Amino acid sequence: MNVFHWHVMVDDQSFPYQSSAFPNLSERGAFGKSAIYSRDDVRRVMEHTKRRGIRVIPEFDTPGHTLSWGLGGIPGLLTECSDSDTNQFGPIDPTVEKNYNFIRTLLSEVSELFHDNYLHLGGDEVDSSCWTTNKKIQDFMHRNNMKNVVELKDYYFANVFNITRSLKTVPIVWEEIFDDNIHLGP
Image (cartoon, rainbow, N blue to C red; front, side, top):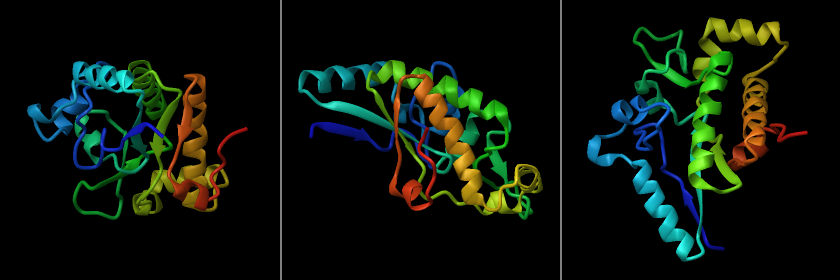
């Protein structure tokens, strides 16, 4: 199998992917200006791998592994941890509808740049403690008859899977999604 799974395209510690729609994500979220994958860098990798018959599947791991995303100035993207005296944040807030608009725009850009039918959406190691302590999220879960954060994660991925399918992209996820019995689609 000639597949390059670009696993550290983005992560908690850094957002090196340079988004044309959201330039602040890499400007504020990357380790530094020399640690950014520009669109030209990505194109060069794509050309190099194409000549060698290698597919490139990027990973944009959500809803966890997104702390660096919060530095990019997307208000309301991350969950505020309610039990903290400091401004600590957790995974993407699945209850905010505009977060799905942001994800749609970002993944649309990514799918056009990478030219593959597959997009890795992660889903592993989601620290849901902020979801369990955030009153707004708990109220949302109660209003929507969700008994636990696994059902909230299922809600999140149902939305994100719909986005990827509308982009004609097949979502890939880590094993934890299967372990949690998250519904993978229709």
